[in-house]
Image (cartoon, rainbow, N blue to C red; front, side, top):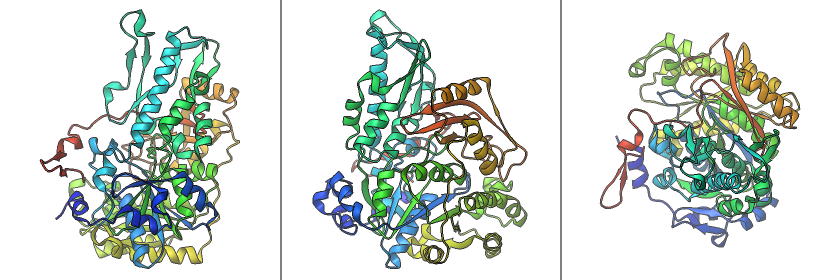
Length: 556
């Protein structure tokens, strides 16, 4: 059996100029990065705004398991399937950059015959967006520390610096560090921290900004520290927003690549949904809507994270309406949620499937709360039995959700035709009455509790003393009316990654609350979630290599 990277490397890509033509974007409106990838110019984005909007289809999934769900694979395959049916479609994805490549898995470009290509580029440096974000983030950190060193006219309390440095690499030893050691000229000694680049507020700012002017305004609003008397200090006060925007100028432009079947793919922005809002950029999504009749986009991790944030944060801010939601599951993952160990998932187990399907049921219920039609799809494996598939199909349809089998990993677009036809039928026969889950004017704690109870199924929410104080301060400072971005483990509906299926009678613990004023939301950290992940015992990096001809292996 061929690996994902072998399939991708054997594919014949079309020049990206020809892919752009499908979107009525001309060659002179592209900024080329070689032959097969490009950025779309601001002029093109402005020109297409007058075009009619297509339909927006959100792809999400059950909570991820070691068995795999294939959300990106389904997203890419659905876009290819629309092409098989003669429909004009574009896929809008997040950028993975280095995060997945050197951590747990080897790639994040889809899989099998439903991949975005060039796969190696996408999973490595791509067009440099993440490097730009990292540089802008660390420029701000450097200027902040320099301000304290050079007289500290703003009166910043070094103990109250909240802006963290970042790196696009899982490196646990950088979570908690001390800077400024040495002599007097080496800076003020203080405790500092690193987060992974996707957790930087600048990533969120880039993804939610409408244009360069909006980007600069958002950068200016970011809170970086507090003074000795408790006043919030913003990035704008450090006079470095212009330089940061200059670093981010090109990164703000969406990237264009293609699927294995030459469906256009806009890839832009990559915040993880367990620590940020978890979806691609507003600019890319809005551009896609003016470029095609059908836009397939995805939200990160399970629907309790990515979809909730897409609907409650991104759609609210950008004025987007989702026309249909595709909820991805696998028979294997449902059995895993039912207590079957990974090595036994290939065996038919009706009882485990019956127990584990409760996870899918909760996600179905959650999405229906937003007033959007839901289609459940099974990402097919050869070990799935007809009886298992029939049980899941009946389960979904009895709860008001359409159902279709997806075989895109094996067959590409042809394997997604049943799903595409189901989506088209849903769009034609069911109306979306989308509305966010909560009123953003509610107090911060009430918004947190709505999400925890309605989406996670929690019995209660408890706050550490520190979190209570932080909420009080944020509301006093005027940030109480912002949406809430919940930082939570992706592996469970609860804040405990070991609680699989549909946990009952659990409590969510909020340990820290802070404002991302530039992004425009309040972040609530739950459980033991880390904003700087560590590497596993056997990092995916250990399987990656490049031969004398420059051919990369080990990305999958």
